[in-house]
Image 1: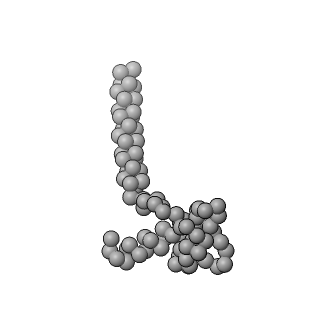
Image 2 (image 1 turned 60 degrees about the horizontal axis):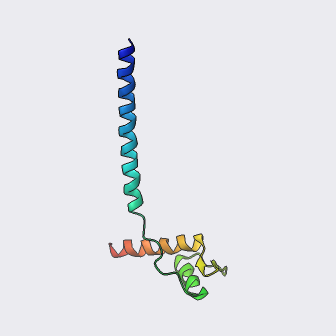
Length: 90
């Protein structure tokens, strides 16, 4: 009876380990497909405003603070970039 319990317990642990490794592998594949981060930040408020205009999210508000795009502007930039790349077929 005890042996049977341990056999089932080891089978359960083995299944959990396989599922965990599979999930970790899948998440790593997803993470590797994210777009590369900004290599060069816009150098002026005008450049960040242009990015927001291209993304259709510029309504007079400046999302450029302390020399760095805010998270919203960064996401908007990538929304435009990904759309452009998909249109080109990359």
